[in-house]
Amino acid sequence: MVNYYTLLSIEKTADELVIRDAIKRERRVWNQRTSNPKQEIRAEAEARIINLAEAERILCDKVKRAEYHKLLEKAPKEFEKERQTNTERDWLELAQRYWDDDDYNSMAYACREATLQQPQNPVAWFLRGVSSFILKNLQNAVYEFSEAIRFNPDNALYYKALGDVFCLDSEYQKAIESYQRAKRIDSGNNEYDIEIAICYNRMTRYQEAYTIIKEVYAKDKNDDSVQEAFTTTVCNLILTSWSSDGESVWITNEAQVGYSNRMIDKLRGILISDADQKRRYNEIRDSILEAQRVEYRRSDHMIWYVVIWGSILGIMGESVLLGIILLAGSIVLYIFRHRKPIWQWNAQRLPQALLMTGLQEGGKTTE
Image (cartoon, rainbow, N blue to C red; front, top):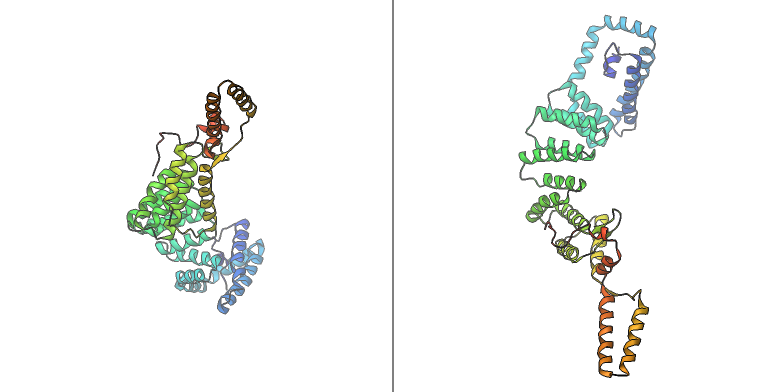
């Protein structure tokens, strides 16, 4: 005889809504296992689905449920044997097996059983947190990783996992605190500094990100993860040094040109493998080069130059030498005013309020 309350992990006093929710949850888990490549798992799943159907038929009918309760009272020894069998099953091993098979719903079920079986085992809580994280049940994962930490506060991996949950949930300050605790336990691991820098970047606190990742990069320039985080941070710093209206950016002064050149030069020699990051880097590098390209643009006030040159020609009728000097000087002035780098053209045409954004001459920079 099957104990349906044990099967559903609910109390004997549960109401119909709780029963139906438990049945729905269990069916979701066991229906997925019916297609498992391992025959023994498929057989267990098929048997469990039959039991779930029977549980629904009996427990959701008041009369049949009352009769079932009477039968429960007559069979205590049978259920004690069932409980003992369930206790002896190695749920941690099953959870690991399901994880290896990418069967995350089954992993979640086995982890839940493991924490019931060993409620003070930090590994059980950690694996349960992993399954919740994979299934995007982030609130559950926070609780489960916190339990793992409570039972073993000296494992850096548990703090790292908790930080990953907070980071995915955009709670970056909490993530940073978790990564910092992991770093205190495992100080030689660069991974925590990388994650902290990523969080600062997402919080747009680029200078703090750079302070951290610069030190890591100086120690390990060949690590792909370090290179990626360093490149992202440098690109962010460059972009925020430019003048912006909130949507577009322009290089508008010499300080921005110099800073951009010095920072982009720090990325020389890095082989960027990520396609999106490489595209972003190329766009920034090309924008810096374009800003320095000298370009001639015809004057919007050309008529005044024509008038001036005409007057000079008139003067040449009286004094050729003076006319030549004035003509040459006006041509030089014209070229000087209308042949200059793009960043100067930007500064000339953009509103003054926009020019005051970004890095200014004499401004403090992080390099």
